[in-house]
Length: 544
Image (tube, rainbow, N blue to C red; front, side, top):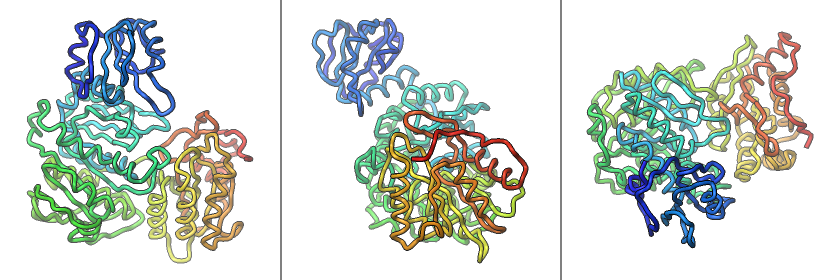
């Protein structure tokens, strides 16, 4: 591709030197991957300044460089831009011919529930006969193929995002559903994606180690909603869905509501649980002048096998009768996730019957309140809950499922080199909602595991919990899970939280293979005398 074609896609160009009409063979922000004819993009990263490697990139054959600061005589064409990360994303979008402009794109962000909501939306689209694709932190679905997106993944980088979207376009995809994490938004991994519908699940305490403050974290989430009108009228959307208004789907029960509702959109879908006017629940109702639909969940019935409820719509909406939801998902938080998916579907004017079918068709999501059954006398569940809010939701759901007199036993840890405040907050949650807590490892990385666990234990003691009676500390996660199942009695619930769909656990800087599902299966088989095999995933010593 010619450099001139790539330059046309770039906002924020400060200066251009050298010959622009040259052929570019590839785009790279890693000088070690530069080959002759490449365009090298330098930017100031978290720990590395890419400008230090411009000379190395030129030595390796770079034909041009993009930089955020003036570079003296680089010897090749140079483009100075305001933001290198953003520019990199736009370059990858242009390299693949802006694939998102050929389909309707739904972006889903939030602290908890993103993956479940993406899967609900995707299931609804399939029920409606729409050619759909999905990119989540668990996998990517393109046509009839499913691909893993990684182990400890957040949103894939901009090169992978645009490559996957290009494959969707080439497969005839009409609607793409894209999970957008705060890291992915802040680091411009989804910049250049022409979103049509933006969905939020909630915004609670998470990732403050990266963002620095809750306000910065919230601002990162808001980037998805601000991008809606920035990409207005760009490209040609498919005929089936060409009239989709730029729509914000907001959680009226969440504290983020008023903040996000102040960001302009062509249309709003506002949802809430057990509320006729969910707009009021998240704070003062901002003055929205665009068409707004309010979705409320009513008559919620919960059982261990799933839930049923009605969705009532009011305001600017083409449906007049309640939608009847039947889902195998459990927990009040999943009522909210279903409402978010319904809002996205109604933004595309999908018929209520298809919405109902799609919600009912989703059997579950890997690592989200996933039951592990070996015929034991108690319920064993794996869940991804790794934030205070998610842990509270999972434990509240478990409490609603357990019979009177039976116990909820939870196993969880807190990650090293991440938001430290969570360690205390999650201990506080467990002290209030669990009967027995097993504090263990969850990706300690280079931190002292004993110190991490101590912060959680201190929070539980402050709540009046007694170590040895109400909670224990077991560093080895496999041993912790076995301790939980060994102490479970008939009718109890054992809830293993924090890893969910993930397939590795990090000690120091090494990712060791790990799946909570397999660890729990082994513990159950060992408990019931069905195996003498060693644990499936040997880990480094946890005696820290």
